[in-house]
Image (cartoon, rainbow, N blue to C red):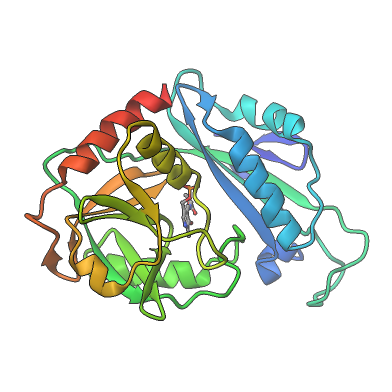
Amino acid sequence: ETVYLNGEYLALADAKISVMDRGFLFGDGVYEVIPAYAGKLFRLEDHLERLDNSLKSIRLQNPHSHEQWRTILSPLLKNGQDQSVYLQITRGVAPKRDHAFPQKVTPTVFAMVSGITPHSDPDNGVKAVSMEDSRWKLCDTKAITLLANVLLRQAAVEQGCAEAILFKDGYLTEGAASNVFAVIDGILVTAPKSPAILPGITRDVILEIARKNDIPSSEQAIAKADIQKASELWITSSTREIIPVVELDGEKIADGKPGLVWKMFYKLFQEYKQ
Ligand code: PDD
């Protein structure tokens, strides 16, 4: 498997960085996950714009133009395959461990590809569990500092669940590594963009599909009690696309099967990807 590190394409086993890297010592970096369908990067420009926002948030300059990013990532893609690209930029290798930014360091740039696991089974969905959102206040920054997300997802997995669905002050934010949609009173709803959530690119695509197809949708505050009335619940991300959640906290959502709106969006999303 070939990966990209600081200007070179290498075998994964040969890609090495210093233990003094700020990413390793402080989680001082940002990342993106970009799906590629049939070997073509999906919504690359949107992902690179979000990367610019994340870099701005941590006060790091983008080492590459969008055009350069396309050139860097393209050789990693396998012809005709569905994959996802992971890219990460850290503040770089500093001479000593000090919380404050080092002077004159070169960012570390890394990229690799991995698989995509969309859900296509119309008869079954996944289980999820609700949890208190224990993350920091800059969740719109796609930071590599993911310890809270890791602990939340692990707790969900240990309860036989595919995702932790997070609530902050009684309101839905998102999943540990996904955005969350619900169908409530026939309207497709999701939490509004704010520093409390990552503005998912898949989320944008779904809202766009809804508008194009005259399916009522709304970005609004969603209380925990509203979720209990939901006829459908979904999680969305670049690596999992749209996954129907059929059980939350041990209680079935509607009849415990993927809903009709999910089936429709699953189909529309597959068409949209082409
Ligand atoms: N995560 N919210 C969080 C906290 C996420 O980590 C992700 C994606 C999303 C969905 O965003 P998008 O639709 O742009 O993938 C929302 C990626 C896939 C990851 O960390 O692996």
